[in-house]
Image (cartoon, rainbow over all chains, first blue to last red; front, side):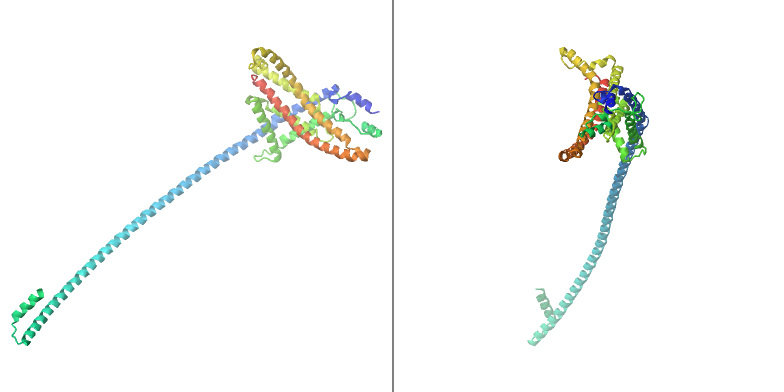
Length: 173
Length: 260
């Protein structure tokens, strides 16, 4: 019994084709659309645009700052490398200098030692020569005495001069 | 209520898949006048409130690192803005707030309409026709204001052989005027069909109360069908909002750059 008025209200078929409700729907739709449009264009969209722009800005800034820091790091690395190279070069000079000094000292000491050695050798040679000369003299004296004794023993009379000449001649030969 | 009583009295299933689309006054049982507060008013108000909630309250923090709600609002903003820029061109960005309004209104009306017991405002041809006519009028007016008579070049396909051009022009003119019709009926039809199908399956769901034997099979099946179609309808709700919006952008492109 209640279906009759309802069917009358909604028409024979689709509620969508019930033209009596069109005015109502269009009226409220217009209000809803205008309200939405104003909410969006006055508040929401500018706000979101600002937020997005701000984010973009801070991202750009951060990237620039990062780029700066990176450049600084590269600079620091270069400075470090340079300091290292300088230190190395300095160390090399110091080493070369020390080497040269040591070599000079060494050379000096060597020269001194050489001189001392040659001096000693010369002295030694001189002593040897002396000793040899002494020995020669002694041999000559002994040979003369021996020769004179031998001649005497054989019954001859040894003339000193002849003996000395004979001994000298033998020793030379 | 009366119809349900009647159906129960007959001891059969109650099929009223179209009842959900009826425009009813919120208070009382009177006729629906232009200014009557109806379920249309209620659900459109909810739509506007939802848009307000997402795009205004959601972004009230203005955070550089967004909250979840704010990032959804930003996503929607970027999505539509990019669409307008890509499809309609840079000079189409003037219409961005307008297109955003259309998109959000349709999207939220569609999604809110999926709530159980809800009324889907976008399932009504009266609503979608107004939306489509707004687009049609905007495109036509902007086209003539920007290009003058050159806008008619839209119908004159200069790349076609000369003898074919008048025929093509006729077809182009017809298709131009059919645009708002297809534009509006596509949206309303999609919404209406899905909701009606859900309602039909819902009518089968209480079968188990009427007849236990058949109901054991039919009730789970219909509940499964409702769930499946509901998921599909969520997809359709978003896709139809997207389709309506991108078509608006395409039509706007015609108005701004009428030459093929």
